[in-house]
Amino acid sequence: MKQISYVLKEDIPLAAETEILVIGAGPGGLCAAVTAARRGRQVALAEHYGSPGGMANVGEISPFMPNHCSGECLDRPLYPEWLNRMRAYRSLPAIANRHSEWDGRTVSRYGAMLAAEDMLLEAGVKLYYHHTFFDLRKEDGSITDVIFHGKSGLRAIRAKIVIDATGDGDVAARAGCRFEFGNSEGYCQPMTLCFKLCNVDKNRMPPRQEITALYLKAKEAGRIDCPREDVLWFDDFDSDVIHFNTTRVVKHNPLDAEDLSDAEIIARRQLRAFLKFLREEVPGFERAELHSVAARIGVRESRRILGKAFIGIREFETRAKFPDGIARVNYPIDIHNPSGSGTDLRHLSEDEYYEIPYGCIVPPGVSNLLIAGRGISVDHALHSSMRVMPPVCSIGQAAGMAAAMAVEKQCRPEELNGAELRAELKEFGANL
Image (cartoon, rainbow, N blue to C red):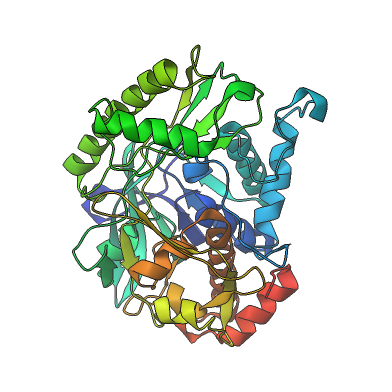
């Protein structure tokens, strides 16, 4: 074990010092860390789990939802690079032996994890797995040390710039940043446990509408207790595997430990019911088996950290553009009913998008903090559009670039010229 050379007050060892510290290795944290490191900065990344990739890994999320404009990816360069690097971990069989050709968005959790780690290590990011955010210290409005819990007990990492990529805004909230939570009734979008079934005869599967009709009859008869209004499934790489994103847990707080525990139990109860229903009532699933189950339930929404700028449904409706826009989004408003059945979908046309301004990732009151992930300064409705993984990658790379520029200029992130940041992102390869 590396010898610890510093000790903080209260006997918490100082494990490391770095220029930029990213907390969370999901899509936002991945892209923030890689961007800052490729810019030549010293970057450390701390992650609760033992591997990167976030919900694409531990949450079994697939496929990535599209964020394209007129057929062009809006989330260059790191999102498509991550996708392309996943190819190295799949041996794609001939199309003649497949149910469908790879769509460029379907995700293998293990490929997502390994490709993410490849990018981080090649960029020179120092990785701290099994480090769970515990607390922090502030001095004069700046975070000095971030404290983590792990097998070694409590350890601290000191950084000039801190990037909260936890998704839930845990670091920002602990630092005293203001935030919003859920809809007007205080409920977040429902949580979902993803799973895959194998030994499925796809040639005999009914159309989606017929599967949903059978499901609704099973619900009415009391054989399934799930608030979702339909069965949401996606094709997978393998000829006999189907991915399900169809469980729904409502009115549970993802920031409350007991609620989160209960949500896992409820979701797995629904999984058991879906497996029984599919085997007994849907053609093609008679011999279906569990192929894989997410390691944890998926959280769509929790805290939204308020920043120097704030945008919402109006900016979606007006396709708002900003001189300091750091990401472009075409994905629809996609609000899964926080209280029960139904999904509110509002689309943009394929050649339209709105932009997210830099101020949405800069929380006031903490001078060296940036947000990279879904929990940025937007309202409940707009959050349902920007929360999917491709735009989160763009938000992450913007946070990483801003952190690197702040270190170079020896200034606070809020002092950066957002238009200059946008120009640097364009030079980096961003579609802005």
